[in-house]
Length: 446
Image (cartoon, rainbow, N blue to C red; front, side):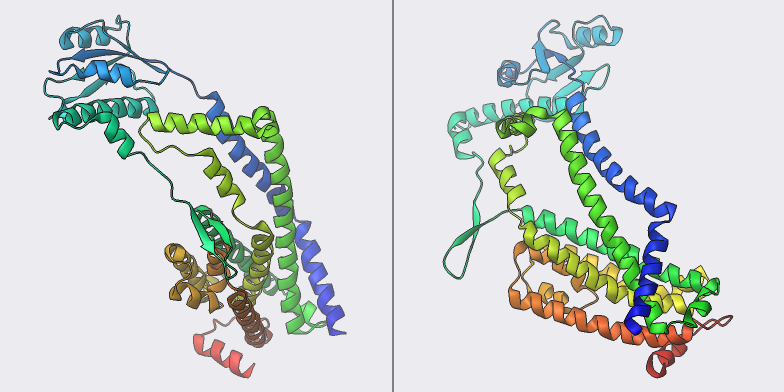
């Protein structure tokens, strides 16, 4: 039976690839790299050296702005002193290395109108966060005196310019509200990028697999027992199963590893959500001191909860399989036509260009995921696997999703039909470099 022969080819392709050392190495190495990445970020954040910046203030300003800079300081890593009031003496002592301070902040006479004259000197460069914090303190001091010069109460000004966050929500057809925030942009970008890399990676594996079998004359032996269509589809489906197995292992091992790593490095934060909230609040406070907008921990929690993974994961699997089958059929046809890597690059370019274009389109429609451009490219099978992964986190109507999925399935069947006709001739073609007119003739006449 045809199905039995196709299954045998699929089985052969699957087990041949999963037994390769490269598959085992990458399957184990992938989660380890992800865990190492997250672990490295956490470890660097926890083990960062807390250097203390002792700054001698030389204040020649008319308003004595240095006192306000000292008053505004809330950072434990920065300490201001007034040991040497002369700039030349302070500079010489810092250069000689016998000063009881490691940095020198100079405030010029007309600091309010010419703040560019403020300088910060040091014998060893401190961390960028500390430099930014000093800049912020000086900026706030200059702002304070400028407000007073214009008879504006600085406290009133701070109250007026207080940052706020507009809560967003979707209004559903039944009148209910669902939250909306920046999380879909992040999820959409990451999902589309993973989709692009995955389809391109496993599609190229199909092309190389066909080329290897053709070059080694293995295809001639296999074609004595199975039909060309069965051989091509068995190879495509076998590599698809390899990809799904690898994805599953990566997701499970990475999730477990990251949880255990967080439990080891941040046990309080993992066991007690309140401790995690405290860490987030402390991070937001440090960002505020350095002149950045603070991040509310409730907003962070909402970002993590806002995307429906029950929809994202099945959608990703469907579009990965649909996009992979669509492109792999084309890659298999290219692999059957060529004998060398240079020829493969030439014929694979028209196949890979739409996929490259799709990631460019996906990045462009992030600003308007419900626009006409987004809807159009969601229906084109060359771009829909990547573009739909951008749109799904924002919410896509059932009708649009079904139409996009239907077009992708029909396009896959057409691509398989066309590629099978090319494959049937090309897999037995040796020693001749095909031309584009030959490819079109094989596709039409078979």
